[in-house]
Image (cartoon, rainbow, N blue to C red):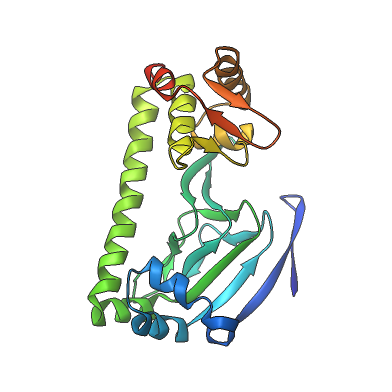
Length: 244
C-alpha cells in the first residue's frame, strides 16, 4: 500500500495499488459491472478483463484538476465529489459521485485534461480501465454505448438542476430542496447517515451557518425528525411547500 502525502491539504492518504479485477473471488466485480452497464455477464466479463480495481482512502485525492487522463473510473462503493476552487479559495461543487457513477476520461480515444479535483468523501473502491478500451467496447456492444449515454444524460440533468436552483431559489430553499431530494432516495424518507452540515452547505452553494439554521427550523416545526444516526422527513409535502 502506497502512502501519498498532501501537505497543503493537511492529510495523508493511503492508496492501494491496482489489482487485476478478474482475480477477485466469486467473479467480483463482474456482477456490479453487468448492472452498471446494463449488459450480459459475457459482455461484463470482457469489460472486467480489461480493467483493474483501485482503492482510495477517506479524503484521498483521486484525480487532480489539470492532470492529463487516459483512465475511466467506475465508482463501486463510497462517495466522491468533483470540486473546483475559486480565486478567493471558495470551494465549488461540480459533481457528486455515488456507486455506479463514472468519471475521469469517459470514452475518449486521446488523453483529456481533468476539469476538477475528485476527492473521496469515504473510503472508495473503483473499477478502472483505459478510456480508449471503454470506447472500443461501446462501439462493439450497444448496451455499453447506451449505458454511457444514460450516465452522461443523468449528469447533465443533475448539473442543469443545480444551475436552475442556484438562480431561482434562495439559499434556504436550496437546503430544503437538497434534503427532500436525498430523503426521496429511500422509501421511508430516511437519510442515513444524517447529512453533515458542511457537506450539505457545499452541495447547495451556501454557508454552514445557513444550512444549520434551515435544518434547525425544520426540526422545530416537526417537518423532520433527527437522531444520532439519521434524519427523516416526516412531512414531505410541507417541506416541498417551503422550497422557494
